[in-house]
Image (cartoon, rainbow, N blue to C red):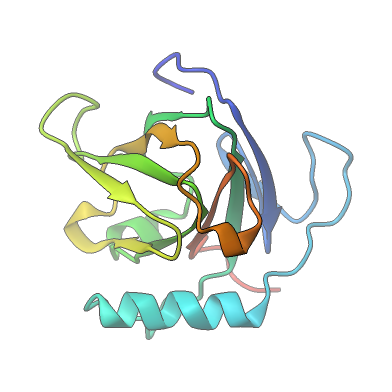
Length: 173
């Protein structure tokens, strides 16, 4: 990560493969395999969440997803989601994150710097976090996971999964 914090998560991409700092239809930095399609029901959920949060989704395609799997030690340093096209970012198209499993402390900051001001939020299993508009380039990250907080019926032990969806801004084929 740009702030020097090592990644301690495992990831898989759907729709588009993301690797610093570009998108591809193949997993170029691993095995070169084609990226699996993004399920329509996840796209529909992201569109509904963004609309419920007050964002216009008319132009937003939600065509890329990064699924991150965190263990009890995992964290994700403060970063901006800025690999998308300039038109997507300037339009403030929203990013939607779905949380499953263990809770985490999610830090949501400002657009200019990794330093304060920021707010720390506890995201629990089932929470959806949406940001866009003027906050589209806000620095954000996972400060820590909270082991043992997943709903028992999920069958996840000391695991947090986040499914983050966004519009890459890349024209469809």
